[in-house]
Length: 273
Image (tube, rainbow, N blue to C red; front, side):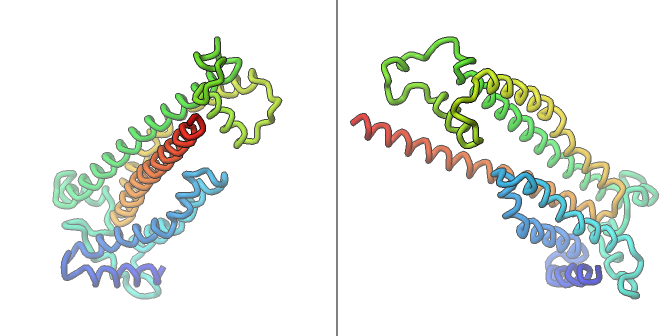
């Protein structure tokens, strides 16, 4: 922990000429960004679904960092010496203070209480942002599962126009579903009814998760209300990073899919010519 306090103190000294008393708070934000940058390869692998454990690793690896942050701003002494970080502030609120302590120093609208209210408001905005994005992602995933189910022989009422004529562009959804099934390891002789049944179950699971998981983002508010202000800053920064990182990764994925689709269409045109 002494290494962490020393690092934060050094970062705070670098920022002090610009931010004065809030330099240490900015150092915590900068430290959190450095941690998330180090974990970005794992987050990228989790987004791509490289391994089942990849989605848990970024969260698990952050737990020791959060614990050290909590201890550093809760302990009166570090390494046998007085903890100098406890005297640093974010505006009027000490970084080691909690919301309950701020309420005793002027109430929720006092000098310290307003700092915590600003923190809670920022966390609520990020949580709402995450919830909206999560619901949209769940809806898109459910729609994709429904389209894949409808593309199977059991889910189609009749062939689409052009399929009998053997046009190169016929049944793109079926081709996409077959390609996805092949990647998932499905056997060529698998029954379509089983695929449709699994897809229906997946749709129901996605619908339920889409309604519950986004709300978990607001749990950060509860945590921020009981931990030191410094730990609350860490939670705000890492949560905002997670949402922004996922949006960026989704944007890159969509660009890659568009480029792949354009390449396939170009190849089809060349084959027809």
